[in-house]
Each structure stands twice: as structure tokens, then as C-alpha cells.
Image (cartoon, rainbow, N blue to C red):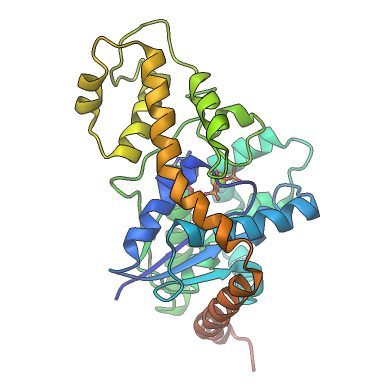
Length: 327
Ligand code: ATP
Ligand code: MG
């Protein structure tokens, strides 16, 4: 089976954007591919975290991903910081990554604007760690949201450069934005993407939000002064709500336009909220069950961590030998 690698940071509580843009696809890919899924907790500290909150986010995210349908019998679902090769290869790749190319990364520009008091070196070299995550597993395919495509391109550049110097060490991974992977925007600011690290919590729907909270957030979503529900670049708020509604119900944009023909924004927003609440209900129930079973969670990640360590060590050993390190 071709190898897939993808990761999510426990940098906050998982959003509907993460789920519709990434995680839903992780679930469906499990049968066709050999999947490595990582909880990217090393990446998380590029932005300052509170220790207590961070521990909670890691556990919540692990339980929630299992609840969403990641099957530890099929996929290797591990915790990045438990597998030592990631930090090791990241250091090496740092030395094969240029200042100029890192300076062009839009995520770095965005995040250094948002966290101007902490523009640390890790935030800058984030793509080298992400390249290590992917290249260690000789991944064929890497599903990402559109926001991560630039990091995928730099990963390919780093790998190609390294192979050019030392021969074929890394598989050049193919990044792709899954066809049905929705790009979900903030409900309060539809020109910027929904992010778990966003301070404006009203713009984000979290997977573990209570039904009342979800309904309230959708009712308050920013729209426009028009009254008609249709998909258009000039209507980013309504189009975003339509994308979300389509992703959870499977309806096409035309079907949605027809369904709400002659109805107002109020009815539409209520329908979107209700559809999301219903979609999340079984996931939340499953999460509530798993989060209480710490022993099961620990047993699951330990097995995955050991597998990932062993698998990735082969790539790291090869890299170090090629460079000239001795054993
Ligand atoms: P952070 O704000 O800490 O960067 P994030 O919400 O951007 O968090 P990540 O952990 O960086 O989440 O990304 C996990 C996955 O979710 C990636 O594949 C990313 O492309 C995808 N993703 C993130 N935000 C969205 C969104 N708004 N719509 C669709 N996909 C998204
Ligand atoms: Mg992100």
C-alpha cells in the first residue's frame, strides 16, 4: 500500500475546519493507504503554551481523533514528541534549508504578525520539522489543507536537494488537497481561515462545543446585506456557511440554493447549525467515552509510538551515514 503521512497540532481545541478540511479525509484514506497520523506536539510550542492547557489539549485531541474514526488497528496514530527521530532529522534538515526560502513562507509571516512578541527561531524553521515528519516515513502522499501546500512544496525542495547531494535517500512526497476537503473560514471574519489558535472564539466552531454554543455561533455568523442564499465570491460569509452545510449533509451548492430559495438568512443559519450539531453528536458521545479510558489511550499511543520509532529510524540511519556520521 502507498504510504500516507499527515499531522495535526494540539495547539488548541480541534475546530470544524480541521475536521472538514483534513480529518474526515484521514478516516476515509485508512483502507486504501498505509497511514501514519501524528499529533504534532513539537510544532505546538512555536507559539507559547500554558503547560496545563497543553496537556489537556494533547489528551483531548488524541481521544477526539479516535472518536472521529481513526482506527489504531489500521493506522499508526502516534505522538510526535515520543518519537525521537523527528527532532533529530529536523536539526539535520535545518542545515539543508535556506534562510531565503523560509522567509517566503506565508504561515511564518501570518503567525509572526499575530505573535509579534515571540517571533522565535522555531516558528521560522517550522517547515524543516514538518519536512522531517514527512520524509522520515518515505510518504508517497500527504493530504493537507490548502493553507499547508506551501510547506509541502518546500518539503519537496529540501528532499530533492538532499537527494541531489547524496543519492536517493528520500521519497519525494506528493501533496494534495483532497477534492472534498472543505476550506472553512472564520464565522466572524470570512476572509481568514478558521484556526484553533485564533483568539476570536466566536469565529470558530470547536468539535467539543455544546449544541447551544454551536447554534449561537452560527446565528451570529457574519453575512452580508443581501437576503438571497447563493454561492459567490462576493458573499464570503454565506458561501462559507454553504460550504459547511454541504460538507456535513452531502448536498451540492445548487441543491442548497434551491432548498433556501425564498427563505431568509435566519432560517438558513439555523439549518446549518442544526446540521452541524447532528453531525457532531455521535463523535462527541464517543469522545466522552474514550477520554475516561486513559489506560486504553496510553496503550494505543505506546504501540503506535514504538512502531513509528522503529520505522523512521531506518531513514534517519541512512541519512546520517550518507552525510558522513560514524556509528
Ligand atoms: P493553528 O492555528 O495552531 O495553526 P490550525 O487550525 O491551523 O491550528 P493545524 O494543526 O495547523 O490546525 O492543521 C491541521 C490540518 O487542518 C492541516 O491539514 C490544515 O491544512 C487543516 N486546516 C487547518 N485549518 C483549516 C481550515 N480552516 N479549513 C480547512 N482545513 C484546515
Ligand atoms: Mg495551522
